[in-house]
Image 1 (spheres, one colour):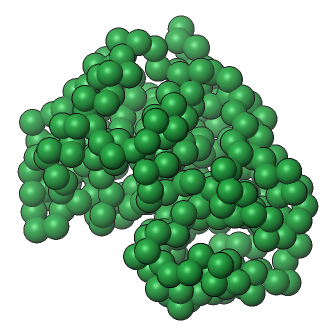
Image 2 (cartoon, rainbow, N blue to C red):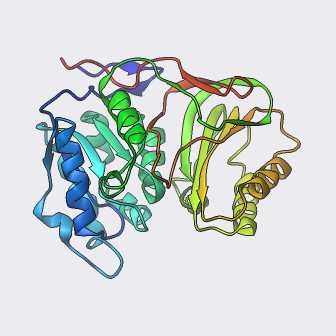
Length: 308
């Protein structure tokens, strides 16, 4: 049985021997890295279902939009599959949103994990389907991830305990403590949802942001666009993850401080979230307390429940 916490659908925790289905809602991927990532999952004690259609290609995408969406739909329908993990990000998740069966996601809640471009699905699943999702490693990134990433992933998906996430190199950009529902992901992807039926609102939320290969002025521009669009109205707190290959990180933090200088919510930076060997798994859709001074994100309830 799947229980609800603060009206969210909490998926069942994984146990040894459970089957994880692999989907590719975005770009096509390196097959060797996928195979290495599958091996990592198998060594964790899980069975991995890699469907034949996973390896389709259409330009820079892992097949046509309807095909990529149907793989997601199929695994949500399949009761033998207990969790769904994405192969990689890149681009294309936003193109699948019109083809996802949100009713089946609501009716068959299960673990769904990814990051980067997958943030489009994470955002919509948490807001529209009220499903607790997981911002964390994908199959191809597991191939090169460190042990800390793998340990954090196992804990988040199997423990059934309330999580306390602390950064290795925490930096308080704005002091304070706040509580709210944890949301967010890749800044560029979330920004591209603005003006669509899936535009995010982070009122009373603690927002997680990360990105890769974006110039500092583009990060500034995206933050301003989302702020002008009202996405940050009533924001409770902000957590900064990794901004890989985006230039000097201190300069990026200055942009963030400037954009939010008139706001009084806490801002904590330095989390290993996103593109990097260390990518800490975070539940999305659950309430947590952000303590920017103690460098801590403390969840109020478990992200998974016991199997029926």
